[in-house]
Image 1: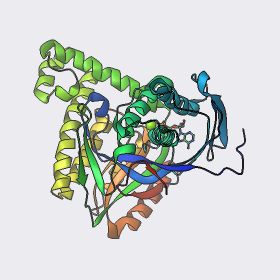
Image 2: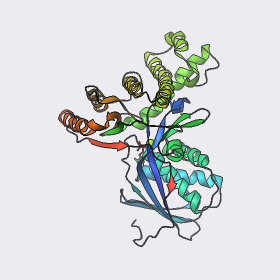
Image 3: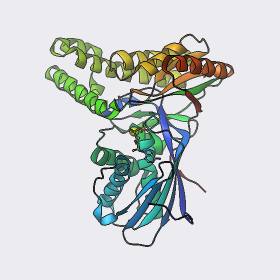
Image 4: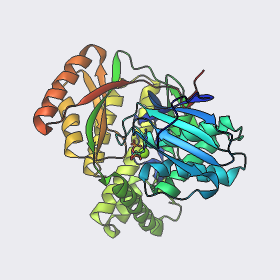
Length: 376
Ligand code: ADP
Ligand code: MG
Protein backbone atom coordinates (compact mmCIF):
# COMPACT_ATOMS: atom_id res chain seq x y z
CA UNK A 1 0.00 0.00 0.00
CA UNK A 2 1.27 3.46 -0.77
CA UNK A 3 -0.07 6.44 1.04
CA UNK A 4 -1.65 9.45 -0.72
CA UNK A 5 1.06 12.06 -1.13
CA UNK A 6 -1.27 14.99 -0.59
CA UNK A 7 -2.04 13.89 2.94
CA UNK A 8 -3.07 16.93 4.96
CA UNK A 9 -3.72 15.93 8.54
CA UNK A 10 -6.51 17.29 10.71
CA UNK A 11 -4.70 16.32 13.85
CA UNK A 12 -1.09 15.63 14.85
CA UNK A 13 -0.35 13.70 18.03
CA UNK A 14 3.03 13.14 19.66
CA UNK A 15 3.36 9.94 21.63
CA UNK A 16 6.55 9.49 23.64
CA UNK A 17 8.59 6.51 24.65
CA UNK A 18 9.53 6.10 28.27
CA UNK A 19 12.34 5.14 30.53
CA UNK A 20 11.93 3.57 33.91
CA UNK A 21 14.51 4.77 36.41
CA UNK A 22 14.05 1.70 38.56
CA UNK A 23 11.50 -1.04 39.27
CA UNK A 24 12.00 -3.65 36.57
CA UNK A 25 9.34 -6.36 36.17
CA UNK A 26 7.64 -5.04 39.29
CA UNK A 27 4.60 -3.68 37.46
CA UNK A 28 2.94 -7.01 36.70
CA UNK A 29 3.77 -8.03 40.25
CA UNK A 30 1.63 -5.07 41.36
CA UNK A 31 4.56 -3.25 42.91
CA UNK A 32 6.17 0.13 42.31
CA UNK A 33 7.93 1.75 39.35
CA UNK A 34 9.48 5.18 38.61
CA UNK A 35 9.03 5.87 34.91
CA UNK A 36 8.84 9.03 32.85
CA UNK A 37 8.19 9.85 29.22
CA UNK A 38 11.20 10.95 27.15
CA UNK A 39 11.66 13.34 24.24
CA UNK A 40 11.90 10.56 21.66
CA UNK A 41 8.48 9.86 20.27
CA UNK A 42 6.18 8.63 17.53
CA UNK A 43 4.33 11.31 15.54
CA UNK A 44 0.82 10.42 14.35
CA UNK A 45 -0.96 12.35 11.62
CA UNK A 46 -4.69 11.74 11.36
CA UNK A 47 -7.58 12.70 9.17
CA UNK A 48 -11.13 11.44 8.86
CA UNK A 49 -11.71 10.02 5.39
CA UNK A 50 -15.51 10.29 5.53
CA UNK A 51 -16.12 6.62 4.93
CA UNK A 52 -18.07 4.58 7.42
CA UNK A 53 -15.48 1.98 8.14
CA UNK A 54 -12.41 2.05 5.91
CA UNK A 55 -9.13 2.81 7.66
CA UNK A 56 -5.68 3.29 6.11
CA UNK A 57 -2.61 3.23 8.25
CA UNK A 58 0.94 3.76 7.09
CA UNK A 59 4.21 3.50 9.05
CA UNK A 60 6.74 5.73 7.29
CA UNK A 61 9.85 4.21 8.86
CA UNK A 62 8.62 0.71 8.17
CA UNK A 63 7.61 1.72 4.61
CA UNK A 64 4.58 -0.38 5.00
CA UNK A 65 0.92 0.10 5.68
CA UNK A 66 -2.40 -1.64 5.60
CA UNK A 67 -6.08 -1.09 5.07
CA UNK A 68 -8.74 -2.54 7.30
CA UNK A 69 -12.49 -2.29 7.86
CA UNK A 70 -13.88 -1.34 11.26
CA UNK A 71 -16.50 -4.09 11.12
CA UNK A 72 -13.89 -6.75 10.40
CA UNK A 73 -11.25 -6.29 13.05
CA UNK A 74 -9.35 -9.52 13.66
CA UNK A 75 -5.82 -10.50 14.63
CA UNK A 76 -3.27 -10.25 11.86
CA UNK A 77 -0.31 -12.46 11.01
CA UNK A 78 1.80 -9.31 10.76
CA UNK A 79 3.05 -8.55 14.24
CA UNK A 80 3.02 -4.75 14.23
CA UNK A 81 -0.51 -4.57 12.78
CA UNK A 82 -1.75 -6.21 15.97
CA UNK A 83 -0.75 -3.21 18.08
CA UNK A 84 -3.05 -1.12 15.87
CA UNK A 85 -5.85 -3.64 15.49
CA UNK A 86 -5.81 -4.47 19.20
CA UNK A 87 -6.39 -0.82 20.07
CA UNK A 88 -9.19 -0.52 17.50
CA UNK A 89 -10.80 -3.65 18.90
CA UNK A 90 -10.75 -2.24 22.45
CA UNK A 91 -12.14 1.13 21.33
CA UNK A 92 -14.97 -0.55 19.41
CA UNK A 93 -15.93 -2.45 22.57
CA UNK A 94 -16.40 0.90 24.30
CA UNK A 95 -18.01 3.18 21.70
CA UNK A 96 -19.78 3.22 18.34
CA UNK A 97 -18.55 6.68 17.37
CA UNK A 98 -15.52 5.56 15.39
CA UNK A 99 -15.56 6.05 11.58
CA UNK A 100 -13.07 5.67 8.72
CA UNK A 101 -9.73 7.47 9.05
CA UNK A 102 -6.29 7.75 7.47
CA UNK A 103 -3.19 7.84 9.62
CA UNK A 104 0.57 7.98 9.16
CA UNK A 105 3.09 7.28 11.87
CA UNK A 106 6.69 8.38 11.91
CA UNK A 107 8.92 7.17 14.69
CA UNK A 108 12.06 8.52 16.32
CA UNK A 109 11.89 5.73 18.85
CA UNK A 110 14.10 2.72 18.33
CA UNK A 111 11.98 -0.43 18.46
CA UNK A 112 12.61 -3.21 20.93
CA UNK A 113 15.19 -1.14 22.81
CA UNK A 114 13.34 -0.99 26.07
CA UNK A 115 11.96 2.49 25.39
CA UNK A 116 8.47 1.13 24.84
CA UNK A 117 7.78 1.97 21.26
CA UNK A 118 4.88 -0.46 21.62
CA UNK A 119 3.06 1.60 24.26
CA UNK A 120 3.80 4.78 22.30
CA UNK A 121 2.19 3.17 19.27
CA UNK A 122 -0.91 2.00 21.14
CA UNK A 123 -1.46 5.10 23.22
CA UNK A 124 -0.79 7.59 20.42
CA UNK A 125 -3.38 5.88 18.25
CA UNK A 126 -5.98 5.73 21.01
CA UNK A 127 -5.29 9.34 22.04
CA UNK A 128 -5.62 10.60 18.46
CA UNK A 129 -8.81 8.70 17.67
CA UNK A 130 -10.34 9.88 20.94
CA UNK A 131 -9.72 13.46 19.86
CA UNK A 132 -10.66 13.01 16.19
CA UNK A 133 -14.01 11.35 16.87
CA UNK A 134 -14.73 12.88 20.27
CA UNK A 135 -14.98 9.45 21.88
CA UNK A 136 -15.08 10.76 25.45
CA UNK A 137 -12.34 8.46 26.73
CA UNK A 138 -10.36 9.64 29.75
CA UNK A 139 -6.57 9.44 29.83
CA UNK A 140 -6.88 6.50 32.18
CA UNK A 141 -9.26 4.75 29.74
CA UNK A 142 -6.60 5.20 27.05
CA UNK A 143 -3.92 3.71 29.30
CA UNK A 144 -6.03 0.71 30.26
CA UNK A 145 -7.40 -0.09 26.82
CA UNK A 146 -3.92 0.12 25.30
CA UNK A 147 -2.58 -2.34 27.87
CA UNK A 148 -5.54 -4.64 27.16
CA UNK A 149 -4.82 -4.46 23.42
CA UNK A 150 -1.28 -5.70 24.04
CA UNK A 151 -2.64 -8.62 26.07
CA UNK A 152 -5.35 -9.67 23.65
CA UNK A 153 -3.97 -8.99 20.17
CA UNK A 154 -0.18 -8.94 20.61
CA UNK A 155 -0.02 -11.58 23.31
CA UNK A 156 2.38 -9.87 25.72
CA UNK A 157 1.01 -9.96 29.25
CA UNK A 158 2.50 -6.55 30.06
CA UNK A 159 1.87 -4.57 33.22
CA UNK A 160 0.48 -1.06 33.28
CA UNK A 161 3.70 0.93 33.47
CA UNK A 162 4.54 1.57 29.83
CA UNK A 163 1.14 2.89 28.82
CA UNK A 164 0.79 4.86 32.06
CA UNK A 165 4.14 6.58 31.56
CA UNK A 166 3.56 7.27 27.88
CA UNK A 167 0.28 9.08 28.62
CA UNK A 168 0.49 10.50 32.16
CA UNK A 169 4.02 11.90 32.40
CA UNK A 170 4.80 15.56 33.11
CA UNK A 171 7.83 17.46 31.95
CA UNK A 172 10.64 17.57 34.53
CA UNK A 173 9.05 14.89 36.69
CA UNK A 174 9.21 11.17 37.21
CA UNK A 175 6.16 9.20 38.33
CA UNK A 176 6.19 7.07 41.45
CA UNK A 177 3.44 4.68 40.44
CA UNK A 178 1.82 2.06 42.62
CA UNK A 179 0.81 -0.55 40.07
CA UNK A 180 -1.73 -2.07 42.47
CA UNK A 181 -3.82 0.97 43.36
CA UNK A 182 -2.63 3.12 40.41
CA UNK A 183 -2.03 5.89 42.92
CA UNK A 184 0.83 8.02 41.73
CA UNK A 185 2.98 10.97 42.65
CA UNK A 186 4.76 13.26 40.23
CA UNK A 187 8.25 13.77 41.67
CA UNK A 188 10.21 16.76 40.33
CA UNK A 189 13.65 15.53 39.33
CA UNK A 190 16.69 17.73 39.55
CA UNK A 191 19.87 15.83 38.80
CA UNK A 192 22.15 18.61 37.56
CA UNK A 193 25.23 18.44 37.31
CA UNK A 194 24.47 14.88 36.20
CA UNK A 195 22.71 13.70 33.07
CA UNK A 196 20.78 10.58 32.18
CA UNK A 197 22.62 8.93 29.31
CA UNK A 198 21.25 5.91 27.52
CA UNK A 199 23.62 3.50 25.82
CA UNK A 200 21.81 1.40 23.25
CA UNK A 201 23.39 -2.05 23.07
CA UNK A 202 21.59 -2.49 19.71
CA UNK A 203 20.89 -5.98 20.88
CA UNK A 204 17.26 -7.03 20.75
CA UNK A 205 17.12 -10.68 21.61
CA UNK A 206 13.95 -12.35 20.49
CA UNK A 207 13.73 -13.94 23.90
CA UNK A 208 12.14 -10.84 25.35
CA UNK A 209 8.45 -11.62 24.95
CA UNK A 210 8.56 -15.39 25.57
CA UNK A 211 10.83 -15.00 28.59
CA UNK A 212 8.64 -12.16 29.80
CA UNK A 213 5.66 -14.47 30.01
CA UNK A 214 7.82 -17.15 31.64
CA UNK A 215 8.94 -14.72 34.35
CA UNK A 216 5.34 -13.77 34.97
CA UNK A 217 4.41 -17.43 35.47
CA UNK A 218 7.40 -18.02 37.74
CA UNK A 219 6.32 -15.15 39.95
CA UNK A 220 2.79 -16.55 40.10
CA UNK A 221 4.23 -19.90 41.14
CA UNK A 222 6.13 -18.14 43.91
CA UNK A 223 2.96 -16.40 45.07
CA UNK A 224 1.08 -19.71 45.19
CA UNK A 225 3.73 -21.22 47.48
CA UNK A 226 3.82 -18.13 49.69
CA UNK A 227 0.04 -18.22 49.96
CA UNK A 228 0.22 -21.69 51.51
CA UNK A 229 1.75 -20.01 54.58
CA UNK A 230 0.48 -16.47 54.17
CA UNK A 231 -3.02 -16.34 52.64
CA UNK A 232 -2.82 -12.55 52.56
CA UNK A 233 -0.06 -12.67 49.93
CA UNK A 234 -1.95 -12.19 46.68
CA UNK A 235 1.01 -10.82 44.74
CA UNK A 236 4.75 -10.41 45.40
CA UNK A 237 3.88 -6.84 46.29
CA UNK A 238 2.54 -8.13 49.62
CA UNK A 239 5.48 -10.44 50.37
CA UNK A 240 8.71 -9.75 52.24
CA UNK A 241 12.09 -11.42 52.72
CA UNK A 242 11.14 -13.12 56.01
CA UNK A 243 8.15 -14.80 54.37
CA UNK A 244 10.33 -15.86 51.48
CA UNK A 245 12.87 -17.51 53.84
CA UNK A 246 10.07 -19.48 55.50
CA UNK A 247 8.95 -20.82 52.11
CA UNK A 248 12.41 -21.28 50.60
CA UNK A 249 12.57 -25.06 51.05
CA UNK A 250 9.33 -25.50 49.08
CA UNK A 251 10.60 -23.51 46.09
CA UNK A 252 12.98 -24.37 43.30
CA UNK A 253 16.14 -22.26 43.30
CA UNK A 254 14.81 -20.43 40.24
CA UNK A 255 11.49 -19.44 41.80
CA UNK A 256 13.30 -18.28 44.93
CA UNK A 257 15.60 -16.04 42.90
CA UNK A 258 12.73 -14.51 40.95
CA UNK A 259 10.76 -13.73 44.12
CA UNK A 260 13.81 -12.41 45.91
CA UNK A 261 14.53 -10.00 43.07
CA UNK A 262 10.99 -8.60 42.94
CA UNK A 263 10.69 -8.17 46.72
CA UNK A 264 14.00 -6.31 46.92
CA UNK A 265 13.40 -4.36 43.72
CA UNK A 266 10.17 -2.93 45.18
CA UNK A 267 12.15 -1.84 48.19
CA UNK A 268 14.74 -0.18 45.94
CA UNK A 269 12.03 1.74 44.12
CA UNK A 270 10.76 3.30 47.33
CA UNK A 271 14.31 4.10 48.42
CA UNK A 272 14.98 5.68 45.01
CA UNK A 273 11.88 7.86 45.27
CA UNK A 274 13.11 9.14 48.63
CA UNK A 275 16.65 9.63 47.31
CA UNK A 276 15.28 11.71 44.42
CA UNK A 277 13.12 13.76 46.74
CA UNK A 278 16.15 14.58 48.90
CA UNK A 279 18.52 14.92 45.92
CA UNK A 280 20.76 12.11 47.19
CA UNK A 281 22.22 11.21 43.81
CA UNK A 282 24.95 8.94 45.21
CA UNK A 283 22.31 6.75 46.80
CA UNK A 284 20.26 6.83 43.58
CA UNK A 285 23.33 5.63 41.65
CA UNK A 286 24.14 2.88 44.13
CA UNK A 287 20.55 1.60 43.91
CA UNK A 288 20.84 1.42 40.12
CA UNK A 289 23.95 -0.76 40.36
CA UNK A 290 22.25 -2.95 42.93
CA UNK A 291 19.20 -3.28 40.68
CA UNK A 292 21.33 -4.36 37.74
CA UNK A 293 22.97 -7.04 39.84
CA UNK A 294 19.52 -8.44 40.58
CA UNK A 295 18.39 -8.13 36.96
CA UNK A 296 21.44 -10.08 35.87
CA UNK A 297 21.91 -12.69 38.60
CA UNK A 298 18.48 -13.24 40.14
CA UNK A 299 15.90 -12.40 37.50
CA UNK A 300 18.28 -13.42 34.72
CA UNK A 301 16.98 -11.06 32.05
CA UNK A 302 20.27 -9.35 31.19
CA UNK A 303 22.74 -10.34 28.48
CA UNK A 304 26.53 -10.16 28.05
CA UNK A 305 26.30 -6.84 26.18
CA UNK A 306 24.31 -5.06 28.90
CA UNK A 307 26.47 -6.57 31.67
CA UNK A 308 29.56 -5.39 29.85
CA UNK A 309 28.36 -1.78 29.66
CA UNK A 310 27.23 -1.65 33.27
CA UNK A 311 30.54 -3.13 34.45
CA UNK A 312 32.49 -0.78 32.21
CA UNK A 313 30.77 2.25 33.75
CA UNK A 314 31.97 1.24 37.22
CA UNK A 315 35.51 2.37 36.36
CA UNK A 316 34.30 5.96 36.07
CA UNK A 317 33.92 8.16 39.14
CA UNK A 318 31.84 10.44 36.97
CA UNK A 319 29.19 7.71 36.64
CA UNK A 320 27.08 7.37 39.77
CA UNK A 321 25.16 4.30 38.65
CA UNK A 322 23.93 2.29 35.69
CA UNK A 323 21.59 -0.55 34.87
CA UNK A 324 19.90 -2.23 31.95
CA UNK A 325 16.40 -0.81 31.51
CA UNK A 326 13.31 -2.37 29.96
CA UNK A 327 12.07 -5.92 29.70
CA UNK A 328 15.51 -7.37 29.16
CA UNK A 329 18.02 -9.24 27.01
CA UNK A 330 19.48 -6.06 25.55
CA UNK A 331 17.97 -2.69 24.84
CA UNK A 332 19.53 0.28 26.60
CA UNK A 333 21.47 0.88 29.76
CA UNK A 334 20.69 3.99 31.81
CA UNK A 335 23.78 5.80 33.12
CA UNK A 336 23.91 8.72 35.52
CA UNK A 337 26.92 10.68 34.25
CA UNK A 338 28.48 13.99 35.31
CA UNK A 339 27.77 16.52 32.57
CA UNK A 340 31.47 17.43 32.15
CA UNK A 341 32.40 13.80 31.48
CA UNK A 342 29.62 12.64 29.19
CA UNK A 343 31.67 12.87 26.00
CA UNK A 344 34.71 11.10 27.52
CA UNK A 345 32.59 8.36 28.94
CA UNK A 346 30.58 7.76 25.78
CA UNK A 347 33.71 7.71 23.64
CA UNK A 348 35.49 5.23 25.89
CA UNK A 349 32.41 3.02 26.25
CA UNK A 350 31.87 3.01 22.47
CA UNK A 351 35.45 1.99 21.83
CA UNK A 352 35.43 -0.78 24.40
CA UNK A 353 32.03 -2.04 23.25
CA UNK A 354 33.13 -2.12 19.63
CA UNK A 355 36.25 -4.06 20.60
CA UNK A 356 34.27 -6.57 22.63
CA UNK A 357 31.19 -7.12 20.43
CA UNK A 358 31.96 -5.42 17.10
CA UNK A 359 28.81 -3.28 17.49
CA UNK A 360 28.65 0.53 17.16
CA UNK A 361 27.13 1.87 20.35
CA UNK A 362 24.40 4.51 20.19
CA UNK A 363 24.28 7.05 23.00
CA UNK A 364 21.67 9.69 23.75
CA UNK A 365 20.53 11.84 26.63
CA UNK A 366 17.02 11.48 28.04
CA UNK A 367 15.08 14.17 29.86
CA UNK A 368 11.82 13.67 31.74
CA UNK A 369 9.17 14.87 29.29
CA UNK A 370 5.43 15.30 28.85
CA UNK A 371 3.12 12.39 28.08
CA UNK A 372 1.07 12.09 24.85
CA UNK A 373 -0.05 15.47 23.54
CA UNK A 374 -1.59 17.23 20.56
CA UNK A 375 0.81 19.24 18.46
CA UNK A 376 -0.50 22.74 17.80
P1 ADP B 1 9.61 -1.85 22.86
O1 ADP B 1 8.22 -1.56 23.31
O2 ADP B 1 10.57 -1.95 24.00
O3 ADP B 1 10.10 -0.92 21.80
P2 ADP B 1 8.31 -4.21 21.91
O4 ADP B 1 8.83 -5.50 21.39
O5 ADP B 1 7.37 -4.22 23.05
O6 ADP B 1 9.59 -3.30 22.21
O7 ADP B 1 7.57 -3.43 20.73
C1 ADP B 1 8.20 -3.26 19.49
C2 ADP B 1 7.20 -3.58 18.38
O8 ADP B 1 6.26 -2.48 18.25
C3 ADP B 1 7.86 -3.69 17.03
O9 ADP B 1 8.34 -4.99 16.81
C4 ADP B 1 6.67 -3.35 16.11
O10 ADP B 1 5.82 -4.47 15.96
C5 ADP B 1 5.90 -2.30 16.89
N1 ADP B 1 6.31 -0.94 16.50
C6 ADP B 1 6.92 -0.02 17.27
N2 ADP B 1 7.15 1.13 16.57
C7 ADP B 1 6.65 0.94 15.33
C8 ADP B 1 6.57 1.74 14.13
N3 ADP B 1 7.06 2.97 14.09
N4 ADP B 1 5.99 1.19 13.04
C9 ADP B 1 5.50 -0.05 13.08
N5 ADP B 1 5.54 -0.85 14.16
C10 ADP B 1 6.11 -0.38 15.28
MG1 MG C 1 6.95 -2.91 24.57
